Image (cartoon, rainbow, N blue to C red; front, side):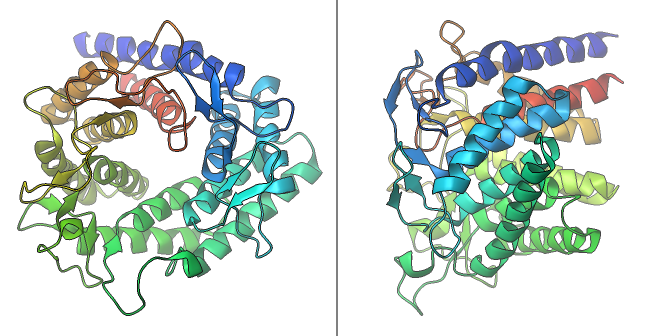
Length: 397
């Protein structure tokens, strides 16, 4: 009974935050009702401080408003908000080659070339989910076709995602980054029902192999952000020693979701053990919270934000440890979830003006007042809130 009371209390907290504090903020301040699309650069009180529009922020917002309709039933306000972004991006976002520009001005005039494949990834899942809730058959077909086209284009681009805009010298160092298998794990999860079952399974197999065989070092009990193509390490350079606890925990809960769908408890147990390596290295014993970056050998980093506490790192850690608790039942994951939950909820939320701050100092003080910007938008936080709310309901049952 005590455990059920805790789960009920947590579920009410998470769902209440989503509906009472987070969704209203973005509906009130983000939609550009004059030019279309969304403004993502929003100060603590809702003031828009920059009107440029970033494609991956547009895709993320389309996705979340569509997902809310799928999970909780269609509300015109949410569906219209999703359509607001879809129409803007289909009218203005695509370059001549079909990829999406990284940034547009307020009216939709292109500003930055389509160098970033992640813009297309988030638009892909946004269009896919919108195709399930759009009001007309024409809109549903248009969104679905665009999602499938983007997925195929992503598969072509992923081996050289930046294309002609890459800064790397051909034939030089070729460290493989964890972000690509991470985003493809997300695509595999979100595009089930759009891609054939064999395609999804093949993609799941691929990302599990890439992560476990290439980025996980079992001898060092560590997850490396960048490795050589064969999985070997380059520890004599900073980027080869780089650890990113938030990224690691995010892909871990993606892969654990895949393993849950396969009823693969052995993989679930393995992934949950790797989570403990990540939090052991990432947790700040002095001030609490999770560091943004770490160096494997505790040497200096050229990323001076490394000691900061970021919203997305903490919400992805919450996802990871709640899912590990749900699927293993082990007290260690319950304890870590509650520890991260307590620190996160006592530092990031702003219940006076709505939403959460994104960037804190190492000590947990607000380092920037923005609630949305070039990198922070309507995505990580609401996804965590609706995902955890759903898991907590399942755990009560």
